[in-house]
Image 1 (cartoon, one colour):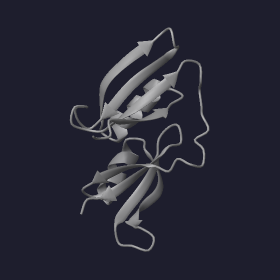
Image 2 (image 1 turned 135 degrees about the horizontal axis):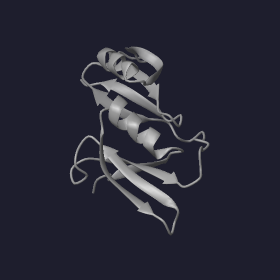
Image 3 (image 1 turned 120 degrees about the horizontal axis):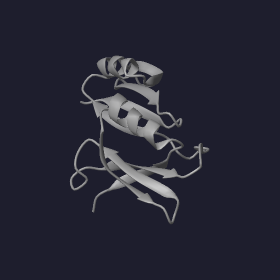
Image 4 (image 1 turned 45 degrees about the horizontal axis):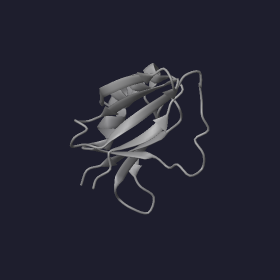
Length: 127
């Protein structure tokens, strides 16, 4: 068994795809519209779905925003250098909400940014 994908609902599919591809460097892997259900699914990730876990971005036609809720935490992404990743992502329009630095009560270097819908993404230094 393995995790295939995580689904998040987005209010503007093109804006979200631009964020995940241009700011986080993912690739749009596939997209399909479901006219009968009035929704579109787009899958983004760092590699082919056959070997990698990806994100499913679900756009329900006509819904512009969602309440994220208190149960959702964040999406975590490993990077080689959190400081450089923050610089690059900020330059690409990313919104850094916690600057790079050691985590609370630890020494792992982390940072947080926010996607256009308010989902938090944690950047974690590879060990």
